[in-house]
Image 1 (cartoon, chains in turn green, cyan):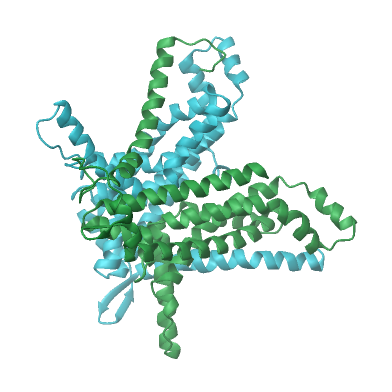
Image 2 (cartoon, chains in turn yellow, blue):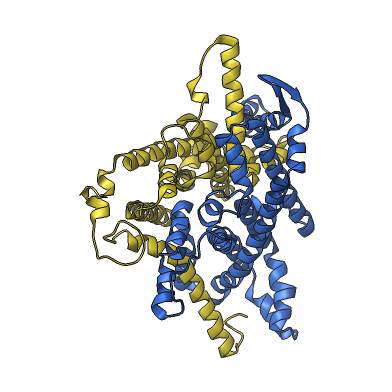
Length: 283
Length: 285
């Protein structure tokens, strides 16, 4: 079935309807989350009690808006810190990985490449508990040997960052490697012929060429970190990032405050994605 | 290899090896060792398979394990069946701007966290929710209908949450199929179904395989959707890992659970790759 081959109109209509239905299915949950953020009620459900912005800007109980809700704002801050750290680490290691697999032929390369892909097929929760177990083994050993209590190895910010970094790096590597593959190496050779050292050639020619992919990888890593739930759930300490904080509230019962936070999240990530697309197009 | 090049290789290998060994390989070995440890007294441990024996002999654990696997397979098949026609439509039947817009519309819902998506389904499906309200309004139902907290609701959530990971690889592989090949199929007397079977599906196989693997993995390892949308009886294997680690503080048994989940997922990924003659490098890299 392709446009150049005539097709039974009935089949075409049914097919089109199916695709429309699919997009309705995709849009439905997000639409209701967004709409009920404006419901003037204590519950994000019917009946519709009227339009309000209280769940965004309200400052008095029972309607405290996002901008006055301390714990949620703190959780957003935690998520941003984690996201920035994870993205920076992942892009750095992803770039070195991309160069390694692109430029060097060495024994064990194939095996290392498969190992590099492995985090994609390990369930996030298993990744979380394995890092939790290993870090507490290390922490216990440090305590037994030298009586030092290494707080960084107990559930908390550092472990969450390491846990997310452990699989986000694979994504960053793939994104950056894909662009490095398309790089014309004669450009680098020209720089070498003109007297540049290897490092200068990479810094002035290759890295600027890679920049869009590195920025893309940074944004994707940030979004993945911001959204991550499974790995984070096992490693989180007392300072919860946003997804965990929202999960805890959702378990207790939801107010439209969560809808308002969700709507802001949607806007934020769409904006980030649009910026990234615009940037990609420009380069 | 010149000395400079050798230095470069070592410098580039170091971060990779540190990352893989300290965060992936050694932690999993440690997890395995922990799962082999059995508690015989206060702070006294022995090495053995007792934790695995407990799992194999406790029906609840095995039933949950099998159920999680079956439901994940079902979710993967459903996702593939729903996504394939849509991916074909985007890759082959629309052109230019409409195409990019449709593709982008597939991606948008996945820029927000799974939590928000699950929350959306809760608002839709719950007793006081939108669909229940709609049914009452149209007179199809006399009173509020609870559609949340059962396997069907959970399946809707699982399929929804992994849709993107099926659509993207399918669109990518279908896109690389030349229209002329399909035309040739028609010229040689093929019909719609036979062309689908002989040309389109074989060509899309790498996409189908990588999409299915990722969707299966995501469903198997999902915690949020079964917890929020599933009922009291729809226990998921990840919930048992969580409860052993965080609630009961029985890390040894939890580690054994985790390892079984890892083995199950690796086995199925390996089997799918073998059956379809694909490799991990080709489907993921």
